Amino acid sequence: MISRPQTLNLANWRLPPHGRWAFHHVREIVPSEPIPRAENSSELERIDVDAAEGLTTPGFDGASWSLRQWLEVSNSDALLVAHRGKIVHEWYVDPAIELNPHIVFSVSKSITATLAGVLVDEGLLDPSRLVVDYIPELADSGYSDASLQQVLDMLVRIDFTEDYLATTGVFVDYRTATAWHPCAVDQIDRNLHDFLCALKRADGAHGEVWQYKSPNSDLLGWILERVSGKRLARLMSERLWQPMGAEANAYVTVDRKGAARTAGGICVVPRDLLRFGEMVRNRGYANHRQVIPQAWIEDCSQGGDREAWRRGESSKEFTDGRYRNKWYQTGNEHQVMLAIGIHSQWIYINPVTEVSIVKLSSQDEPLRPDLDEINLQAFTNISALVSA
Image (cartoon, helix red, strand yellow):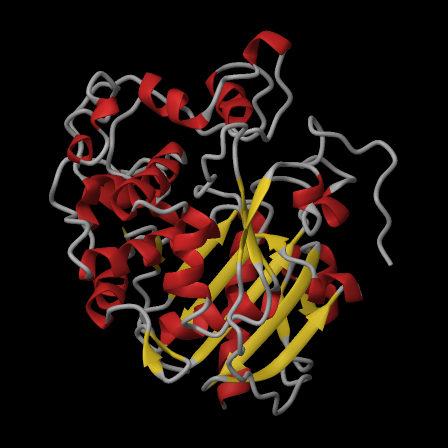
């Protein structure tokens, strides 16, 4: 059993060696709000919980890694694989990981944008409208002339640098505003909404270049709350978690005034994240009902501006891909979709092989591009192995 590190605190919970415990005990560190589960969970049948044991995948320096080597080197906490809706592989580094909600970091963005698709279908949201139509308080911010679709697609030009290793500056101010980082006594009222309203415009036009800016996704959560009149956690429970048949309460971190951290603060047990991935693979259908509009999932998997993506600095990862509604499209022949979070959190969805994969991790570094490439190849190999 993993024990709470003696040196853990609000300033270092994301730093090694604290992650393996902290990432599935976030609510003991940061304020949070529960996302209640379904009264009756949907079934996830298990037919072979060792189906991926035969995996071999390229590692570093031309080595060939087994499943266990890959999981160890990539600091994995959980690996779940479903084929045609049935669990064919389920592994946890520690029994506590199975039962405790694990933070999914920026996979939260994809979950929140999927929820947005429900409200679009209900007529509460129009992606073509300006965000100030929903949040007038942004009139003097860098978002003043940005559309909701541009926010969904990371096509907004705001003066913000996504630097996970920063120790000073705007990114630390951002984490302080979300209650993820300690603040001085005179900053106790600093909050996420005020931070968003204070962000300024960067040079260039919205809509031209894909730029990864996490505050965009926190803004999306604020908009969902404003148009629905409900707190984000309740809205997510009513529209996603309960309809899809979640087996456990999830939760989302909140700032000191209760604003949800929808860019990275959702925490969920691994099997429910697999349920969510399977729902997306099935074009929004789960638990004997259409939970997410099929048209929204189709847009997530097929829509988006390829040229804006190619102008972005991350386009080299998926040269033929796109980014739509906070989902990555790889652009490969299987039209694989991905939700990705720092410290190596993944949802992999392959509609051709009918495979969904969830990988949760406590990787020491927020970003490891060298391991990302290995992870993607491992997912491809697992998908082929279990669907053969």
